[in-house]
Length: 449
Image 1 (cartoon, rainbow, N blue to C red):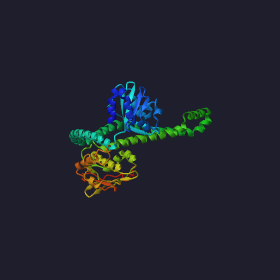
Image 2: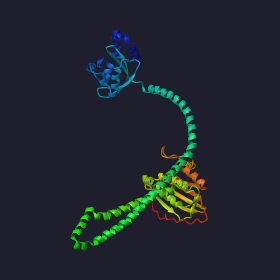
Image 3: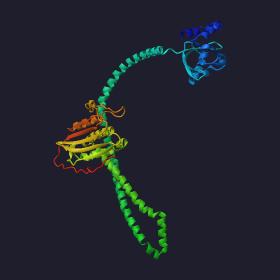
Image 4: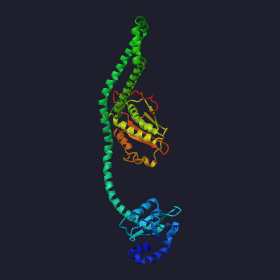
């Protein structure tokens, strides 16, 4: 906008040079000229701007120039005209609207004329020139950011290295410690009150059954009472109706049964939680691992419902396994969680136990997305995950591998993309003297939804 800038810088001499300037600018095919009064109304427009707006100069004289702009740009120009420090070096890119309501972009510069304003506009730079200027600016910014990123990258690498060292150790310990504290608290604070209330409910049920027997006996005697004392008979009938005896004899036993069922469920949840964590049994001992797996599946019920996945179990009748139950349940939980999350709605995850030679085998099979061959060698690496950001820490299989390895076992994985994944936990079968075959009451468990 070189020509327009030079003219604006001559604003001090405009009163004397105005006829010459207006004559030149009126014939210019590039510069769009408009002179406004203090209120922003048009006093003069040159031919270039008149043709641009598709209006006659005389028709727009006296009209507010702000009305020829789009709403936001009109407000921008109005605010700028109202300011006292108008600089001819300041450039505004605004959209002006012609008579057909079609917007056009122009670069405007403003100057004060004492009793009004001089406004000059020119078309924007051509695309190539604008692009070059923008690329230069971006390149300068990129150079600054690159230097800053190098410095911050070094700091981040050091911080990330420290974080990985501490996080791998803390995540599992914190999780298991919290679970242990919660389990101990639940066992201590809930078990005794639940047993007390459950016992009272059972006694209450027995006593109410005795009371109901008495009421039935009294009901059988009502005809004889009516013949001996109609007044007493009438009073008994009236009181029975008043207290809703018929409803009570049906509702009270039902509610007591519901209370007992609810208390039994709470008691079972506490037992499941203890079976799952077993943190009070860190040393290896014989245990029925199938019961631990069943408890783990009950805790995973919300995740199964969320993904629309079912679980099929096949627990063979096996001797008790010498293991550390709590940590092993945690490893199985991590593997089951991965299988459920990898499955699509309507699919089934299969969990089975069997003896494979001298190895106790826990097998988890899903029909999900599978694992690419190039990722199989990395699945046990800490923080390696193929899940979206925020959906996984990459520690599940790493922790499971550490737990199983610490118990002299190993984990095998067979998988290929689109064909699902099979994970096998293999543990040495070391039966202590006196250990007996674990009665597998869980063989008949059906699908977990």
